[in-house]
Length: 442
Ligand SMILES: Cc1cc2nc3c(=O)[nH]c(=O)nc-3n(C[C@H](O)[C@H](O)[C@H](O)COP(=O)(O)O)c2cc1C
Image 1 (spheres, rainbow, N blue to C red):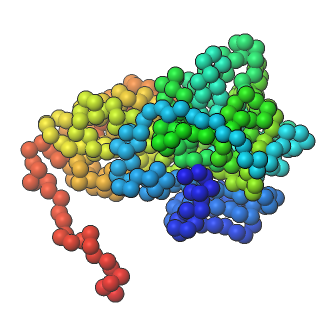
Image 2: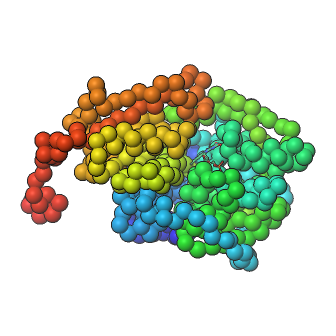
Image 3: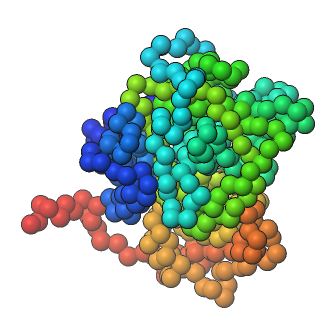
């Protein structure tokens, strides 16, 4: 499904709220997204953004696991997402297609901030940001292509301040170009298929071409068109493409910005993109992702959970499902408990797969819903003894941007039934409850 088809589908299925009254892109738009995410959690479409009659804005498209399963055609639903996606891990070659000539092309005398809504997300942000943009670039040595999300601060003069976390592949590409004294050509892709979105938030081996990985996720080649001003090919279905280059030898203050931990990241010297061109579909749809909110957590958490699932299963095959929820610092794992001490082994193995995010790993039995924090809390209350089942592993670094060491250490929590006491800890059940329709009794 391409971005536009997802939106049409969500409208038809009643899973999207369309706001047709005028909305101010300064704070009002993000306030509405956040309110929707915390109530119905439907997808959101703004069709009347103040100052931008021709550009709509979407958000929360992948805001819950049910929608994610639907757009990836996983009929068995959210509980199979991780196992089904792990089967799609691979590479499929891309294919080139001719452009349909329906894109609007801006190469001269344009201002980016007039073409796409400049969205101010949070009170103390340094200015308007693009938060749903995927940067595509080619390794200057190998031509392997990388996709990654990056926050982009929009400046008045067609420049963008770009945040690259140290170690991310885009930064490695740029360092290679900069050493040669050259800029790095990039395109920012806004409004893409779910496979491109997930490929962009997945950390893959350095030599994996992420467009080919996206093809493997969708089960067919990603179709590409050439850019207008740079030597990069991009997915044909992209709503908005910003072409440009990261400038060598230049770093500028970027931030503050309300980021995923829920605080403001401080001002940092970050990279600068000079924009050369913009191409867009007729009546394009811009995309905003609120940092740290449900959609962001799903986008980043699903690849992490899939990696944990794949890797831990190699040593402990009884792992049934994994989710990083309700934050990227939590990992809930469901197991078929088959030997004493297994849950703690599973947690230890899971920590070995990811050095960045997971702080708390909670292991539960198959009768606990790992997507439901209330169910997890129930397991913690009834099946976990703090004296015996919680282990703190000290002095281990975690998330990089951590000046106060708040992310150091790991916590293993075994919330499975104590070994040998299955009957004593059997969960109570009301027969037939799954078939009860309350409306029919009113
Ligand atoms: C909405 C969103 C915003 C993100 N913003 C940034 C960012 O500003 N800088 C950054 O380095 N990574 C950011 N990330 C994370 C990277 O895109 C992600 O870790 C990706 O896998 C990095 O690509 P790489 O593994 O190919 O280096 C963001 C992710 C999402 C989903």
